[in-house]
Image (cartoon, rainbow, N blue to C red; front, side):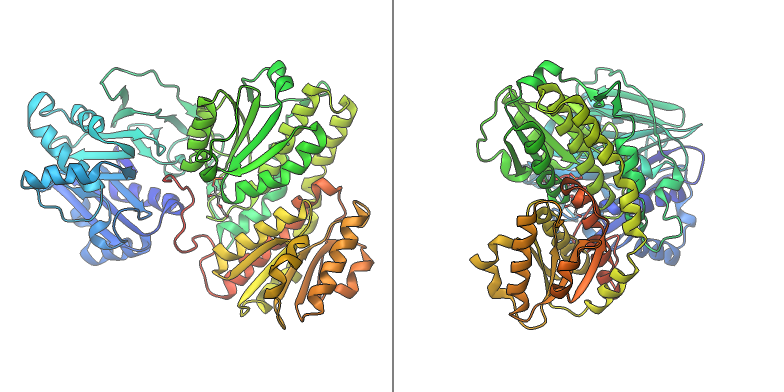
Length: 615
Ligand code: F6R
């Protein structure tokens, strides 16, 4: 984050970092242009460590109205004080914070070291600080900070978003963007740059998103954007459609718990406005109906939880459209030469819209002439910008590092894509499409009912806190739900957890079952595919016979399941394809409660960051 304005920069920047900390919490640092010099403090660990350090050294030396700060998710160099940002040049005049990876940093570092520069960190970022200082001191760019930053950017390879200050230019801050996001906040007599609007939302909702390979200079009075060559670039300011209260915990102990509770609203907001005149309406649909008719194959590409939402949606899209759907991890997709052409629809799903693997998958798909539709929760992020069309999930800001409400919203959004395809291709009659849409619109209430009954799941969670491992089983749409349940438990409670297709049990995983091992089973409805229900009951018998403790998520009123359940969690009866929307919720609550009982920070699990902007 960077700030130039009329308030004490240190407090503004620390406030911003508090809201950006979900992006990385290995270390934090600030630099303020104070008097004649740069006041800098950096500390490994959470932002609170930095704040404690500032209290220790005193904040008087940080009086100034321009400054910057950073929270880090370590890539180059371990998370220790000396690798924390901001980094400075040898003369202590330039400070730089950086997101991304400068891929040619080793060569640049060798060149700088050959010229006598002594490095004080293991980071790639420090090279940028020295290079800017050199550019500012000599040659065509001497005395011109924006020009110096542009010149340095032209030398850097990889992904880099930089914020740069120079003590000789106390009234401005320069920032550059390649890959990792950067947004400018436009206030009254103050201007901000940050990775996310959340950093400045308490001061202004007016913002400008920087495009790729652009440099912005901010002053109190405004901003100027150019490309790396120095040509002016036109920008389009926008108004953020949520406010500070959406970004606060609202009385909850953790953001994640608040976000679990927000799921009915997230679903309703995502569905709202997507049906009119008897038709499904997508958002920015830059793909024509004719193109949708021509689609002969669908890929869903995503990572982590977003990938699981694609696995769920595959069942619906294939059923509704009779199109083959492949769901692929974005990190694998482009390295295996997938068969794509202009009749392939690639659905790229990403909460943040900035996940590097998913972004690269989008680029690869577009190079192969496939149509790309992004499903994204962040307005104007890079993935939707580079896609042919976008459908936004209106889940609001998700701050907890583990995805919850956006998972449900992603499923709803990809279902809308499936219905739009079915409508364009005529594989469903309009009244059938309308019925499915109405079915989706009934889901916010069903999810609200689940939320009303989760107290039992919480106490179950507390009883599982000492377990060594938990297995999750499901079939059909319950299988990706099992995968998601296991992922939540791994990332939040640091517990070994695996999700399996129940039919695979006998092909290996059953060997894991031992006396007392908790196994969560996601049951299908007995009224849906009866054969699936029957088969899953047989699978539960097999594990019960081997001593497993069975925790069964089943439809209300499903009496047949009772003898098979050591613990029974009931969810409302909904159509088969809608079941993931209700059965995922208890698994989120379970993971959060186990993690809390074990004493972990549910919002910021270790080693993780919310946005993974490096591959
Ligand atoms: C898990 C989780 C991650 C993300 C993944 C993709 O709870 O949050 O697995 O789902 O990193 O992130 P986005 O959706 O931002 O592309």
